Length: 95
Image 1 (cartoon, rainbow, N blue to C red):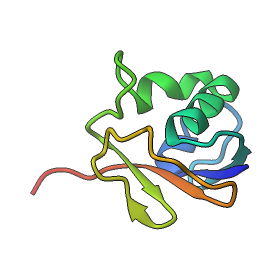
Image 2: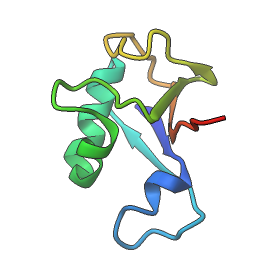
Image 3: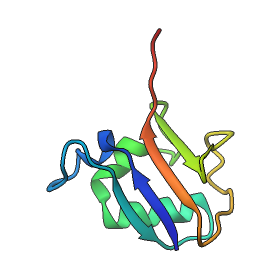
């Protein structure tokens, strides 16, 4: 199972979560898309915040696989191993 870590800016949107805590979950899937679907099945409130209507990551979301930014950002078919860590965070913008 892959380990999905939600940054505090995302986990605080969930009922019962602390404002400054990451949330880590062990989820099944062999691609980024499959792991995200398992995440949304468990935490449906996150779907609309993380992905758009076509299932692509929203502009303000960054995904890291084992510490490396997912590039291109919409490559959700990228395979992940059972020991992978997927970090989901809010991207910063502005100047």
